[in-house]
Length: 121
Image (tube, rainbow, N blue to C red; front, side):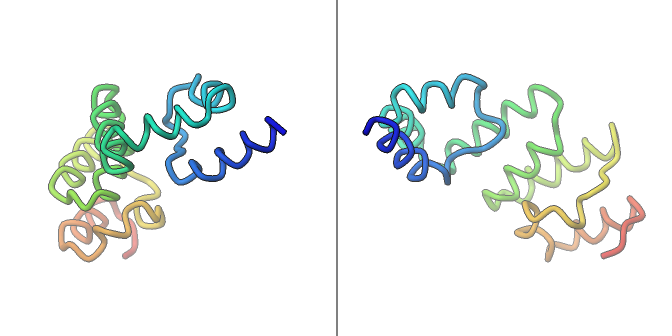
């Protein structure tokens, strides 16, 4: 019965789960799934989680994933600032196909960045 309960909580929390969660999160989720979900919801919900993850990614100089989180939040200026940093450091390869950036594709800065990278629209 406990396994079924854990699976149900896992499904209920799946919209909060991201590959950038702490490595022990899934262990915590299995051992105490209700507290794990509660923590995510109480920390400003999914937007708060995205914002915190973006800041953590910036601290690690992972500007591409930080930009993706900001784009998902609709924070375009922050997303483009981090995309510019990523482009300057490493280049950006899959920007035109990554669905996390759908919310900023209509911005002229997106088209400009694609052009500078040499990617098609």
